[in-house]
Image (cartoon, rainbow, N blue to C red):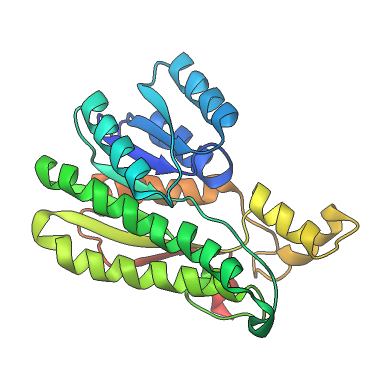
Length: 257
């Protein structure tokens, strides 16, 4: 308890999956929670759940591809809570699964807009408040596919590689301000995005497909959102005060092959 007590944590894509798990665990450790998402019903449901636990939480409808939307939401968050100390850049999409020569410009741009430009906008507009606070932790959700390649989903893999290097660059730029920036690299985690990805491959039996993908990980199964959320809590807390520019790989051994 109280590992991030009284820190204000902004979580993008917080309504479902990994983002929701991050919100719940950070709240349990004493944080104020700003839920950023476009899924209004799910986002407000989460906030009501948090508030019922006595957590100081609020929802903002945020499209991370809109700089103005992000800028206004960050400013309102800082005003409402009194500052911003933690940013979890979790919002992301899988995009199309096609070979590179079949991907359209619009399909490519959509993934980069959410997964890369969204991280840029949120970081850009959180930094001034972290500078004012004299500390900060930015946690960027990349992927195992920001570390290794695979013969599918080129726009997604390119975007997650970009997030990895953005994290390292910003870690060096903002270290003098005591703002730490790290990336997390999940393996396959059972979220709506992964389930939809498997359904998109034509899997008739989703349970069998889940088990088959699980076998790609030496531990033998797909991960859960909580597995990633605990890593986020660590990077948000002072336990990681000497950690910046690093890659936290939580992948059941996938990249150890």
